Length: 108
Image 1: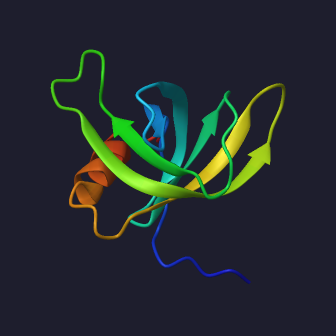
Image 2: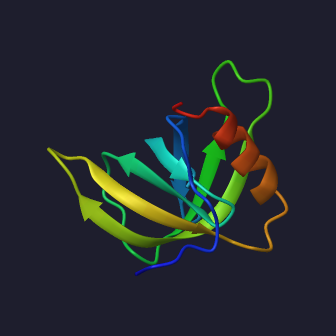
């Protein structure tokens, strides 16, 4: 049985993901989050191993937080939808703030 290092909390937060050094971002929806990473749903192609920046808070939010990570896995879902797992970089100082913001947008 797989044991997770961190407890996960459901979220339905809208996100933007920036792949590598690209200036363009893609839309995503959070599924669950922990201190170690994020599971989310995207409609654009993403590959395992991609460097990614997760942008939390945009639009009407007063503060935007961005945390870096790496795509660990991808799973096709219905239609064009893809579920991805992102491991946050442990040395990113924005990690804790991003996790708190995502957990504040809990699905329950």
